[in-house]
Image (tube, rainbow, N blue to C red; front, side, top):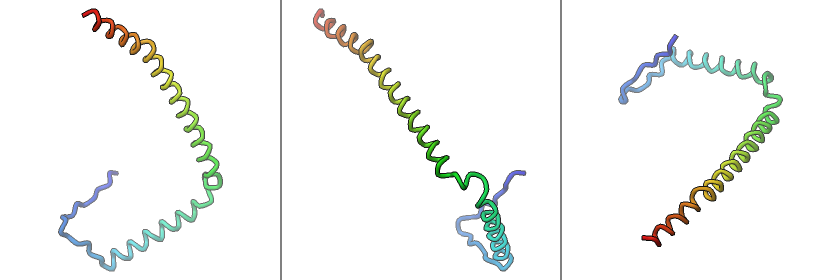
Length: 95
């Protein structure tokens, strides 16, 4: 079911009626209840180690990708840019 939101004009003010306050309090209570229920489940006991290992893995992969990029850049310089520069200089002398 798609979530629909009413678009209010910029000049309208939100009315805080007793019904809205009760609904807000109820939603807040449900939120707090769910947060308390989920506090000791899932990855919460191991979040730090799991996140650290994920970060280290990403860091190592980034370093490897950076080295590969650097190697490709060096090869392009030695195999393409330098020979073209030599050719361009010699062409300039010939003209």
